[in-house]
Image (tube, rainbow, N blue to C red; front, side, top):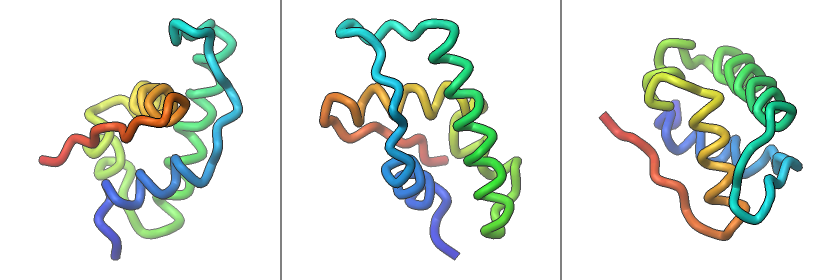
Length: 86
C-alpha cells in the first residue's frame, strides 16, 4: 500500500477543489464548509482504499479539513505544500 502522505498528495491534487479564496487567502464560512466536505470525501476514499481514519487524521496533523484547506492554498498559488511525516 502507498504511503499515506503520498496518497494524500495525489488525492488532493486529483480533486481540483474549486474554491479559490480572495487574494489574501482568507476563507469564508461557506468555503470552510466546503473543506469539511472535502475532508469527509478524503476520509471515505482513505477507508475504501485500506487506510484507517486514525492514520489519515494523524497524517493531516489532527485536522483533515484544515490540512485540506492549507494544501489548497499552497496548490492554488503553485507551491508544493508541506506534509507532516512522523
